[in-house]
Image (tube, rainbow, N blue to C red; front, top):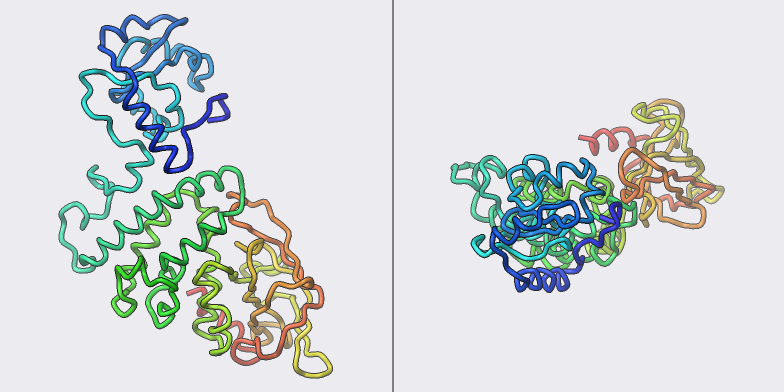
Length: 386
């Protein structure tokens, strides 16, 4: 988009709708009229029934201007789709002059098609294209359609922008995720679904009917944005930290954290890896020592590569409370404070994930924040990894 000096199509749903209405009301042309615009100084092109003025764009085309000019005045639909995805047309929508008179109704844009079930063979799970399935019922199909429309309407634009720029996912959007029950649903089936603030997609699926195939549907639909950094930043990181609270946390801990987490007001991450102990969890060095009162741990150390750490209010943290090896590891819930600092780590994928380096500089953590007993942390970690 901006790389070629062109203004992309409007971002908001309202302005995008106006933009499309404008295009549909624009001029119509015959093929003979388009054919007259076939010179380097005046080049038009037909793609999927729409007419584009590519005169200025030709010199900026990444594949060279000759490929553009070879198709000037012609229908380039077949050549275009042999090399490009539909999204490219959305990106350069401002180049459209109008539509062919004989082209019929305009086809959905990529943004609009994103929210629909594809009819292209093998583009969807078989049960959506006529094949029977013993696993996916009507409620699974209804949930998929609802979640897909949610992501198309509410999330896709934020996902694409964040993935490209590294910006933090929208906090308002995270709250919409909470309202839709998505943050709760990605934790899988269970009693925790009662904390979904407005039910599961507005009550489309009852918590007691929600199964692992419903969760699979939600996870598949989340991934269709093709924006993994954004996915992890918006709620993916939370989905690997929260299970420890649900499975091993005391009741007070769940009541304190889960409602706010499922509303999207707060986030929670899993903090295990260190610069000195990545996959070798049993070698971690972050230490927690009881103070003189015996009521609080003092935590010192570092964590590295913690997905979502830049945005998190809660850190499900692996610490060493005993001797070397797996038996000396414990798990505890640590709130963000002045003694818990996070710094962005530039990783292989988008910084929208909020990947962080964490330092615990004498963080005071109440003894009650321990998960289970001292020394049981390694088992909790392995269970959560599974």
